[in-house]
Length: 209
Image (cartoon, rainbow, N blue to C red; front, side):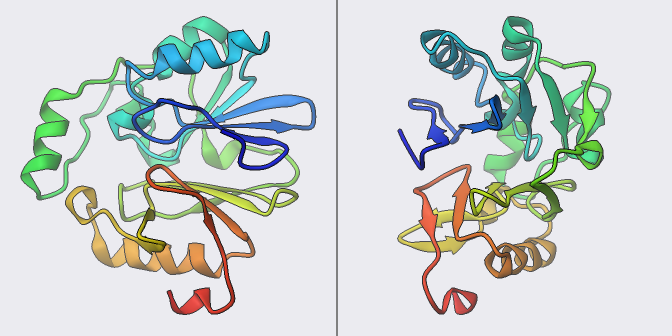
């Protein structure tokens, strides 16, 4: 689904995954579940292209489950939140939130470990700003594409009924998450692209949302 001339929402993934055509290269935001990887790979192969770079917002399995297959298929550079390299590489365990649902996901939804990861803070691409938006997970990270006026936030906020809310069941630190939500709302971006829900386009007065 087209979000803008340069941004696509890849259809059929459990959590929203986006592809951005950026200065002649393709950047994939998040990698979906293990099952979603087939749809992501198909998306690029049908276009006879590939993702050159993958930016991961956080370590939950509906956002990194397809990462191993995508890396094997295309060999992109992969940037992940600094604090979550250990989990995504398989060296550390994911810390669940307090809810039963979160503990069940942590226990049963396993993601294959991925090596050769780069820290998000090492991303040095002009026009892309890496923004710490922790709370949902320890290292939750957002990516602001200045020329597009779009910020990709993962689950730092979720769009529900036209509002920017928080996924309380899966959020580790609600105070930090609320601070990050405000940071996202106050950012210069006019398009907020979340891991769940519809596209959010800012209107006047959104700093009160």
